[in-house]
Length: 193
Image (cartoon, rainbow, N blue to C red; front, side, top):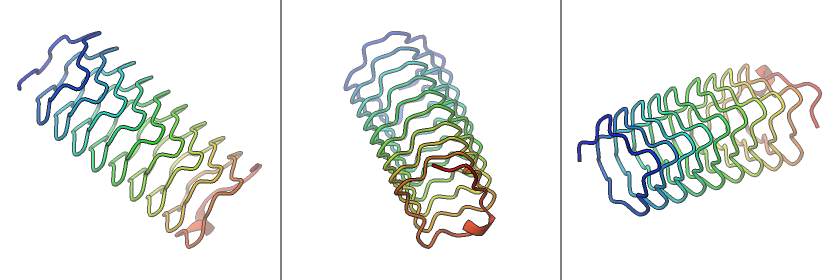
């Protein structure tokens, strides 16, 4: 379906089958897409502010430049999704599957990734200041140059994560597992809880 630039604000699209749909630049602000199938959909530059994407399938979706501020992606599947240059400030990604997600230089301040699966995700240079990553799986993730100042990483699994120049100043690290983390000697720690 070609829905490029469509105005779908506040639309009720629960469980919709939008696999492979072209939603570039579409306005989906506050739309209800709970459980929707958006596998491989093109959502580049789409406005998804405050959208309900609980349990949505966004596997291999293109979310480059998408505005997902305050969106609820609890339990959403974003496996191998392209999230280059997204706006995820204040988004809820509790239990979301973000394995191998492409998030370099992403603006993620205040987002909640509690128990999210970020295994192998590219978070190079991402702004994760104040982010909740409690119990998150970050095994093999690339956090080179990521800003994690004041982030909550309690119980997070960072085994084999790449950490050169990652800034963990004032981060909560109780119970975090850094076993076999790469370049940990180049990471910045200070005032940690």
